Image 1 (cartoon, chains in turn brown, red):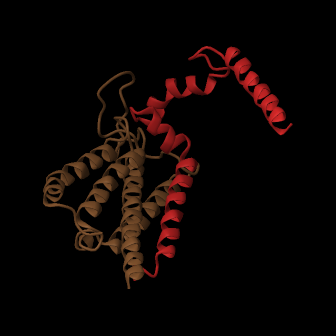
Image 2 (cartoon, rainbow over the protein chains, first blue to last red):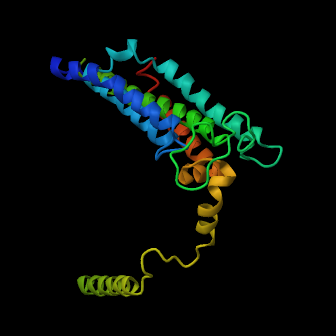
Image 3 (cartoon, rainbow over the protein chains, first blue to last red):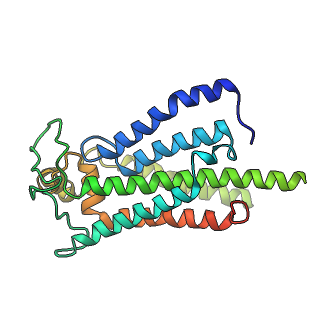
Length: 158
Length: 88
């Protein structure tokens, strides 16, 4: 796929940073507002898809490295499993940080309130882990399929 | 003959759908609501998170989320194995 026109590339340069920031906002505020790891990761991956489409799969590989994204994905899943094993003193997936007073350990105000960032126990950490995994996984899928389409087109022409 | 049998089967199926739609419970009154009441009453104080949906997904039903994350990981492994010639 060749890169698209100059208009599309300029608008992409303007917009993709804001899309990534919005995705990370959805991931980090997952325990207070609608959304969470999966949704925010999908938003960030949509920015990656925009970059791949507007610049072409072969030109974007300086910015999006598939090895780095692959390592990030494995790290996210490992972090999630390690967090779930840390509560094993009581049960698997026990929320050992909630209401404990340490990291993310404040007690939540019961009822309708704007919310406190420092609550939720292990839930915000799991949101970040799953968000990293989803954004890297969807980014790798889009990037590798675009590279594969390029490869087959080259083979058919030769 | 075949068309007649198909039509009768379709009519039977459609009448079942209409009967079940007439007998449906009104919206917002499920048969069993103990689980929902427990979540609505206790989720905020037990997990400390304001978003009850996230507290269910990552705390009460963490196993489900572990399965979803593993499914996504397996999909990426399959795609990398499928396009191994193109990306080397």
